[in-house]
Image 1 (tube, rainbow, N blue to C red):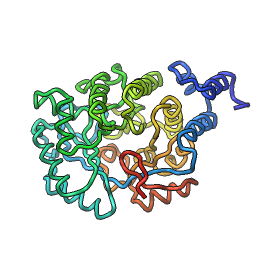
Image 2: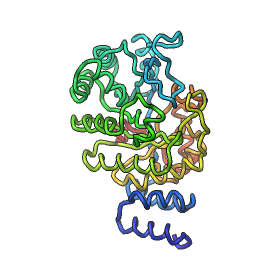
Image 3: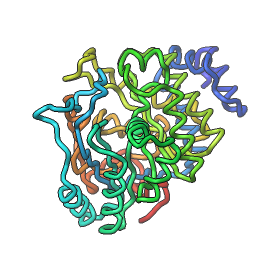
Image 4: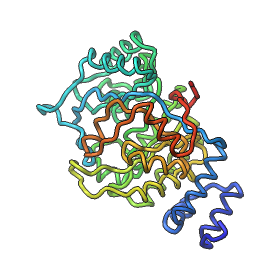
Length: 357
C-alpha cells in the first residue's frame, strides 16, 4: 500500500492494526480506492481466515416449488400472481424426482424456495420435508425469511415456533434470500409488501437461537446507494457478533430484465468492489461466496482474488435469475476446472462449509 492515497493508506494501516472497518471508512474506501488496492486489502483479510489456496464448492440443486406469489416485488421477474395461468406448484413426485437426479450425481443439498402462495400452509411444508427426509439423506437448505414469516402468519403462530416446527420436519438451514438491501428506505421502494429490515434480522436471530445456521445475502444495484449497502453489511455484522449463526455471505447484483422496476445492470467492476468491501466489513463471517450465476465464470474467477473463498454450488437448474435474462450453468467438473484455472485447489464441502472430499 506504499503507493496508495493517504486516505486509503490510513484505512489500510488501521485494518492492519486490528481495527474494524466502520461506516464512514467503508464508504470512503469504496469511493476512493482503486480495484488493485481493494484486492490487496480483501485478499489479505481472506488469507487470515483461509491461508491456503483452497476454494470450496458444494454439489447442490435449486428447486423452486412454486412461482405463485402475491407480494409483487418490483425487482422480481420470476413470480406469477395468484390465479395466473403461468403459476405452478410442483407435485411432490416431481420434487422427489429432481432430488433423486441430484443424489445420483453425487449431490448432498437442496436449496428449496418459492413464493408466498396463499394455498400452501405450514402442514404442506412439514409433509414435504418429512417426505424428502424419508426418501433421501440430503440437507434441506430452504425458505426465505419472507416465506417463513408468511407461513407463520397463515398458521397464526410465532415465527420462532414456526421455524421450530419446520426444523422438526426436516428443514436444516436457512438461506439469506429476502435480504435484498437491509435499509428500509430501499425495501419500501423495491418491495413495499415485504418484511422490514428488523423482521428479516428477527427471523435469522430466531433461527440461530434454535441452533440453526443460515447464510446472509445482499442484492444490490436496484435503487440503493453505497451508504445503504454499507448499512446492510454492518447490520449483518452486528447480528453475527450476537449469534455467530451465519456461515457465509453472498453479494450479487440486481438483474433488471423483465422486472417492473427496470433499470440497468451493474458492472463486473462494481461487483468486485462490493465483494472486497464485504470481505473487509464482515470480519466475523468466515466465508464469502462468489455469484457466478449472475456474474459468469470469468468474473467469478477474478473474484477469488477479491476476498472470496467459495465458488457456490453446481447448477442443475436455476429459475429466478434466469427469468430476469441471465443464464449460466455448471456441473461439478466445470466448477472444478474454473477453480483450478484461477490458480486454486477445488474442494467439496457441505452446507456447514466442512470439507467432505
